[in-house]
Amino acid sequence: MSAPVSRFEAPNDVQAAVALLAGEEGARVLSGGTDLLVQMRLGAGAPPLFVDVKRIPRLTAVQLDSKGLRIGAAVPAAEIYENESIRSLWPGLAEATDLIGSTQIQGRATWSGNLCNASPAADSVPALIAAGATAVIAGPDGERRVAVEDFTTGPGKTVLERGELVVEFEVPSPAPHASDAYLRLIPRTEMDIAVVGAGVALTLDDGGTVTDARVALGAVAPKAIRVPDAEAALVGSRVDDEALAAAAAASSAAANPIDDKRGTVAYRKKIAGVLTARAAKIAYERARAR
Image (cartoon, rainbow, N blue to C red; front, side):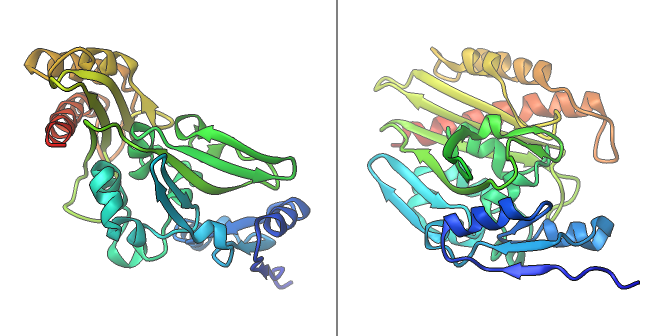
């Protein structure tokens, strides 16, 4: 018996996409497809319906104003990284985006796919969390907003319900003396999955003291996590050695990784602290330069 043939639909507006997703159990959004198509080749099977969202204007729009960035869920990583304003305002977020796969993959891959795939090691997610990003979700009951840090519930699991899809991201504009950084460790020089990823965003007062901090780790827990104790260690400091050591210790303590072929638990906990300190120093110097 031949396998059932999947349908392909390419709606032009959000409401039509929601109706298609709600009307077909197992339907999948096709945005970049860089995770979905790989999963199919590995034996997951084809969904009964592909809903291609790249023809929906809202999902391919990029808007930047005094409030911050609003970027469609189907905007490819390459377009994000090549945007000079984004690189200037959120260099850490741009760095993380540029680490998603290869140059060819970045022509298709999206923040929404990286987030909805719900891999604990997704590069853009800790950086989005550090930047305070929110995912805007559309569904049969209207729209809702979920902080990126709350979007993933576990490996391969998200808050999305039947008929829902991410339509855009909102990233608040950074304060005058604020910046971010993202670092990861991988076994190879390119094209590998993070052993640990660390995103840090800092806001300073006019004297260079940290007034607000956001620290997020990837690949060290079932989902990307914030580290409040590391944030507290940085706030009130000028990111001196004592503050960095305390932040590193907090990240190492918060990390709850697994042993796998990319690293042991002990190694990854150590690296979580090292990358937190290094990213904090970079973010601090960037914020001071503004």
